[in-house]
Image (cartoon, rainbow, N blue to C red; front, side, top):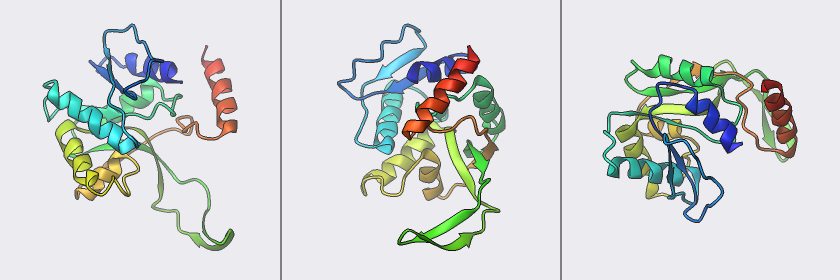
Length: 196
C-alpha cells in the first residue's frame, strides 16, 4: 500500500521532496528514489506523527511558508490527478485545504444501537487526504494541541480549524477511500489490479 501511494506522489512533478514518517524502529520501507526522505519520528497517534515530521522539516531548514501535503498511506488509491487537483485549488488560497466528498448517504444519529434521528447531510463532507497547508501554520496548529494529547484532532484540517481558519474543501473521488476494514483490502486489490 505504501509503495503504491508513493508512486502516485512521485508522479506529481511539482513535488520536490516526499517525507515518509515512520516509527523509529521501522525497517520495512527502503525507498530508492532520492526524493523520498524517511523521518523516523512517528508518534503514538497520527497527529503526533505529523507534528513530529513537520518539526524535522523545520529543523532541516524547510521554510515555514512552504506548502506541505499530508497523506494517509491507507488511502493507497490516490492518483496523481487527485494530488494535482488539490495543489491547483489550494496554491493561491490563504489557508489551504483538503480533498473531500459531499456525504452521499443518509446520515443517522444512533443511541444504544438504534437510529433515533436522521441528520441533515446538505453541508456534510467526508474528509480525505492529502491535505495541504503551510508548514509553519500546520506545525503551530498541531503543536498547540499537543498539551491535551491532540484530543479532537483527527486530521490536519481539524487542527487548522481549531486555530480559527477555514480550510477549502476540494472535491475528491470515491476511489480515494481509506483501507480500514478487511473487505476494503479486497476492493483495493481489485482496483489496483485494474490499474496495471
